[in-house]
Length: 194
Image (cartoon, rainbow, N blue to C red; front, side):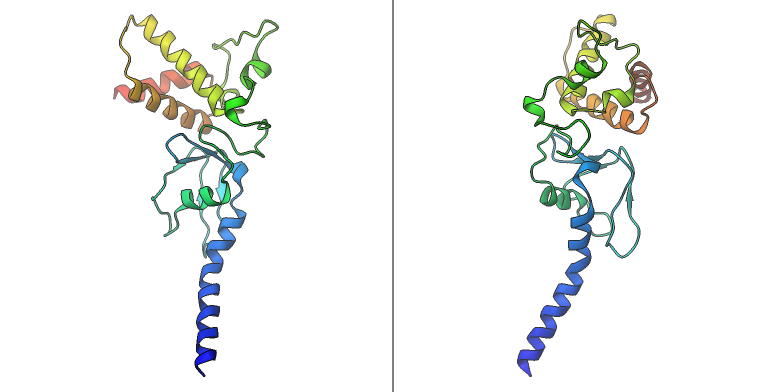
């Protein structure tokens, strides 16, 4: 009888863990980008199946380690399911992701640069900015920060504020891919001033 009790307990434990395992197997690394702080940004609206009810992570949403949604730590699930995705890189099967971000060529320059390799920032859209490697997007936004600060004749550097501003702009662009980058910068800057 005791043997049957142990078997029943194992079956109950397995069945109760099944939704977690199923959700973990079906999230899809290609729907998320890992951020430098260990959080993950949704690149698309993504349904998380197997949780007992429908859960959709909206495009542009950031899931942080330790934060739970419906008692599930989605960031931990992504960390476990997508161990090869390094911070600052899109998932390996995301379109345009053929190499790790640290060794990747400048995708933006290859895709949207002119014959001499120059990118016209005035015509670059948010969709174009976030279509490749996060490293490229961060580089363009860092350059843009310098440009705008130069125009404003500011000579100080607040690295945490710039890093946060870049992450905010990337999230904004992921949710507003049709906007031009200059419009996104203006919108985020106006929001920060309020």
